[in-house]
Image (cartoon, rainbow, N blue to C red; front, side, top):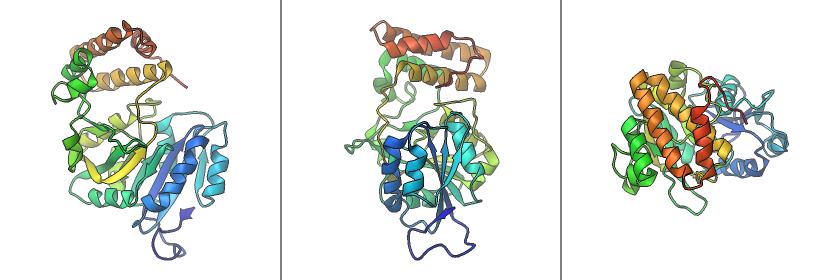
Length: 313
């Protein structure tokens, strides 16, 4: 069902919504109400929109909260936890042919006018994906922008640490220069907590790769979009709060992240490069595991697992 426009009167009968807001949830009852409360301000200036929740078989009150607070939302209930990419695909499949799709984690809060800024940037030539400035709940910048993965960057992060390596472009994947977040720019990819994708980009690039159960699905999609001639555009005037963006992962989640990080690189490079990349990531996990970090020991186990293994929550 179509949500009401954020300016003017209710949507006219038969009017096509201009934007699909796609939220993917899994046991997100603690976060979803805050996201829904932020939509009125975050979507200010968008002529009309629809809200679609793709729920990965939550066992808590997520769906009931959405039905109570957003009765016009379309809820797509998946039969089991199929992952973030599968949830995105399900939401898009259930959507109207809108101009763009705004993909959201349940643990984000949109600042006023965020969506309109992202939509406006989509009008620039070749831009297919736009992303906002992400902040933590205290208003501090989150380093959400990324460079393309390379062997040298993986090695730099292993030896120097992610932050120090990121200060030198060829040595780090994460962009940590605060000045780079003050101006619009093209990036290789960005954190997928908030991501606006044009309909043309979606139709050209195709479905999200569901083999990435969690983590790296946005990397894969952004790089595939670039392969098709699209640009990922960072829009600092669009702001969102990302509550879960601290990077403190459980050992199980660390294992998924590391396995997918290596998987995506291997799929895009030859044998020599992917072997070197695996070794650099293994060095990173091993050096930190020597310090007693359980998360990195899980990363090592993921790297040593058979290549066909798929990790599920």
